[in-house]
Image 1 (tube, rainbow, N blue to C red):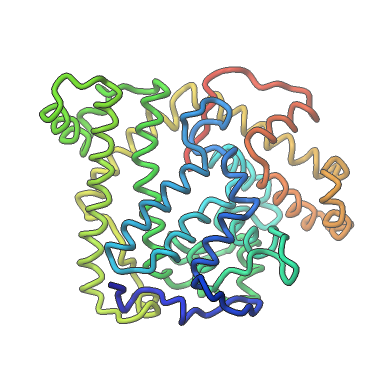
Image 2: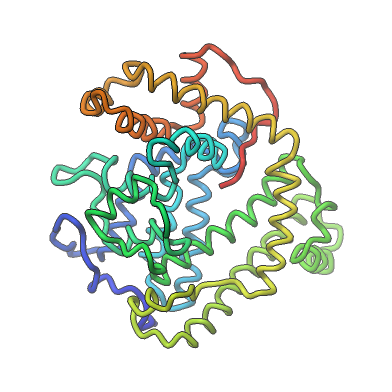
Length: 392
């Protein structure tokens, strides 16, 4: 049963460019479907989640991560009586703006763009879905509903202070009320992201040999999970034992969010989706105990995975890729593909505009393409090794 504070597609604030409603799909379903069919979504299959894309067939990419986040988000939304289609749309779009090489690539691009208005992957996702996707006859972007755009922009909470230019430019024309929290559906997408990466980073780190089951066995949540598996399935082979333990941790996180959020929603007294926005605090949360336990897991992953010596070597390498491509294109924009020529011509002598166009181009690159372009234009092949980039 749908809760009164769930987002209602029949009450949407609409799209920036008016369109007749579909006879078969709600407005939020159409948003979800447009995201799935976008070029930016397809490119996520060759963008890093943790490991650089070409290093193995079993490691997560941004695409598989986004699908996992959407699955978790739908489950939580359904249990809380929220709109599952809006939740899924935000979850599927939340990583569209990531450049190649995860947060390592984002850190490098943000530093390079600091003189030109900054760079942030959530702001870049807004630019993608409102401008850079150009498939439709009547508008640039995907012409998503206000609720989906709001969720993409601020699923992690209100966006305050100096805004990245991509978000500031759009918000000036179409107010997303960045000072408030987003809908409960968008908040669910944010927590689903946390659940998905905490689970799969443990799994991928084990597969990569960065740590062992013994290393994680005493971590909060992991210890009881392994104990339960060993009691139920004594002598289980190592791979199945690992999977069974991690799926139990996954279930604990999902159940905790549902139980905690039910209490917060009941206590909030909000009767509408707008009431949720105006509370001034999030209503989709982990319990304090779960948050503490996840903190221990995140600390472990930071030390043993995201900052492991082999990881730091490749982080330096992929940072260099971005740092060397950006100034090369900035001084020689003719090196960019022909389909960017019109945008470059519009920039003329405006270096800030040219830098922003260049950021759009580099942010849209996949890991594979960025490495190929670096080798083609600079002639330098990166060292071989454990090609890992920081999670984002």
